[in-house]
Image 1 (cartoon, rainbow, N blue to C red):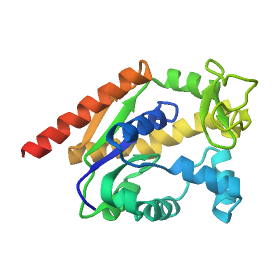
Image 2 (cartoon, helix red, strand yellow; image 1 turned 60 degrees about the vertical axis):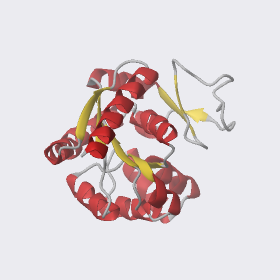
Image 3 (cartoon, one colour; image 1 turned 135 degrees about the horizontal axis):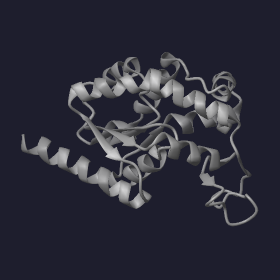
Length: 224
């Protein structure tokens, strides 16, 4: 894998990591590798993986590491990621996944792991208000709906509340995050590549905070 920007965006679901990952991929002109996008495609196609994943996600459960990383590995083997780098969104979620990711990246390494910090109360409000296009996955909310009658502005698909955005499922996902994913922060902190970023404020403001952190790290690496 040739030199390029290789980033991971972490944070509780509802912290805005998907939005920021897309913005960073555009800014640095690298692929956005989203496990959510890949899983939604599998669910829509009703593949065996998609059917199994849907049952787990509807209960707020995390998918097995091996299944997720096999899917990620296939995407990372494609030419655009190999030649330019990537922004990872939705993975890794566990220390085990992080170790598997290191193997997939080798001999390259991650430049930075961004941890978007948003209060849990704010995350709960965001997720309860979220609405999603069933066709393309574009996110809306009850506060920022599509222009016409809950029809996606991008593709014309139906915009609905996800089945796993009920209060019980949201609480379950946040509980799982704290128990299984939060230790990942300590692992990356010890590796010296974790940078916490204040995730409150407008998307533009948060994006600029992240870009400053990434560019500062890249300058340090280039100067070493």
